[in-house]
Image (cartoon, rainbow, N blue to C red; front, side, top):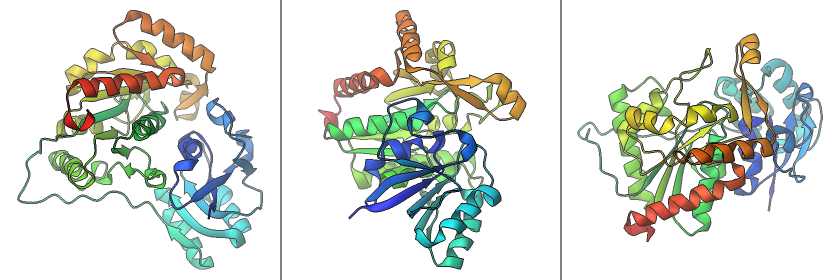
Length: 360
């Protein structure tokens, strides 16, 4: 029996939950999505300029309807708990059966609301790894490793991870994905471990812990392939606007060497991406196998005005033309949504050519 499910809020940050709704655990049927009135979002296509999904009905936060299970995830777009979320919860409390909360800073407030009205509450339980005091060595992994990183944020890195995961799954491989989103577990995959982001461990301990975490996956799940999405980006600054510095990229690069590396970028990062191959090889020791470019453009002027990174959407045909032009240099291979499967086919061929016994 399907479990009627509602998403609060629907924007670029939660697009994967809607695009891959069939992968949701616990028979969740994501049929409703909530947006703020001022966002101007009426359907899924308004968010990412791709094909629409009419099975998801969009509501405004003022609406009252049958909720069922409610997924709350921190939106990328601006909203306020007191004026945007709590009124919605109060107005719809009679039909909310349970809440899955992936908004860490507001989790306590939402949990208090659930206790008041006896609503089941689940928060983001991230991966836990214990470092053995007697074993601080790095393991040599036998399973092929794919790293998926990005130049900066909002590059659809998680969608790229999910597309690759599904490609190899459908081919019959045993694949494990460590995803970059806090809600990754809702899609039946693993979340990037929180110890890599928190300040509890030193950098040396993080490197060891991440290596042991991958070894644990290798031993327990016996996968043919492990795909690892790395949060943040390899740029600390984007056009004078501070971003997330690349500590995680470096720490992950020290934990184990990847067999395949993919970098995701924005439409206006194509020229920068053309120089990536030598940069990531010198900085991290990775060999670049492909660059995925999405349909978003970084807007410097708006970002300076709002002191927050702002983006605009680009027509897919324009992106595809840019990809065709970029591929003429024959140094770096570029891909868009139109030909993303070709990237995964080339990766499969490379892994098979390496002669790994699990992929033959």
